[in-house]
Image 1 (cartoon, rainbow, N blue to C red):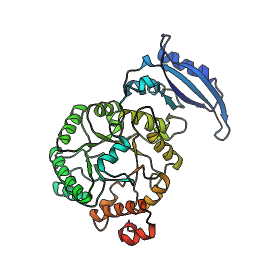
Image 2 (image 1 turned 60 degrees about the horizontal axis):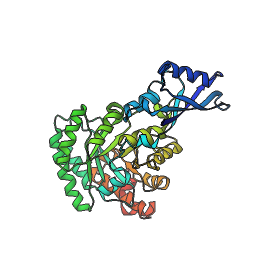
Image 3 (image 1 turned 90 degrees about the vertical axis):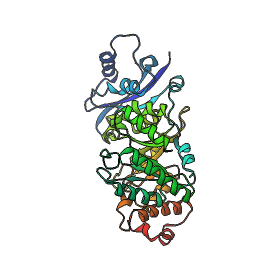
Image 4 (image 1 turned 135 degrees about the vertical axis):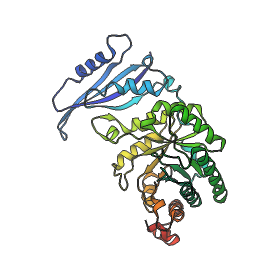
Length: 382
């Protein structure tokens, strides 16, 4: 029989028998039926620094317990086991015959770069902020300023639900015309990514409308939208999905609870069809430990059966000169979401966007920080 192997971390302030504890969990959840997980390896130890008793348990789950979808994967591997406290899903190893049923990203890291036509540097994503209730003039101005400034991807914000003044169809047509215009000027294919809202049927309809206008990228907020919807949309449409996980940070940053970040991002989100994935940033206001961000980035790009690598995206109030540190830490196989900071630039959004693009071009061509400042004085004005 084929299996999916999962490793869990158990912890307690009091000494415990990990095999007994987990066997009770398994019995409560799966009963005495034939097909249920079994424990095949246990390592118990005492963490003297944290003063906590811990145990690593490896379980084999028969693949017959799962359908070929994320719903069953997460429900069986984690959904029931969160009931007890202090259990964390550390790793998951899939049988190749099982993972072959998942398509993963349609484009992935390489495909997104090919779509835009940029291969030598980090990609820059700008987020259109403050759109709820905004009028058409505001939308068109920041859209054209963003495209004129040369951003690689222009995306809508994940809280954009009030589009009564700029309805979706009109917005898509306006955006498609704008990115085509400035794509010709820059010699690359600038991408516009609307935020998908509504039911699965509504999201499908919006994708079909956008595809007719030549738009192939879409933003989805995973936590409220769901893994299953992302997988369905990715399998159904030849599109790129920019995924904001949307999960509270404690869900993957807590040491003793939740899901290990490399599993949540590098396995579950990637397998579901996330082409471009926002990851926690160690810079500015995010301040996630650098090693954790690096682990997540690697998990999205490492070889994993036939699933394409995803493009990791650092985000969070990043300034133009921060790109030097980002490039030094992560190289060029990364994207940077600069949020809406450029929209507030004192000289206007166009020059704000241009400052970021000049910084990333300088970094990728070996131009020093000081030279970059002299090329464009605005890069130091944020």
